[in-house]
Image (cartoon, rainbow, N blue to C red):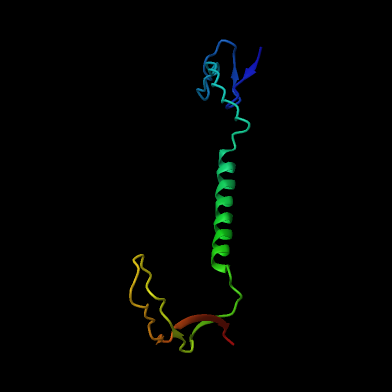
Length: 129
């Protein structure tokens, strides 16, 4: 039976191990079966899960930052003014001392004294024009 070399096309016989024209091996050893690669795991989406978590953390951080920085912000600068008010002088009287022992002298009353004026601080916040 006439056969031909698959490399150069020269005529070869069944008993030839190599082509007499080009020297190619006519009966190569069978290749061992390559180990099969394990199939990809279904549900192995760790990269996608990590990406989603990172995006959620960033979004929550931005929302938290905006909430903290915008609390009470009405987009207008404000100034704080402190106003001091004084109350008029009012006389105060002291109560007579109390004792458990009987006294022979009549109780004395203290003369009215004038207390120093008191100052209260009032804080008002106004928006700047």
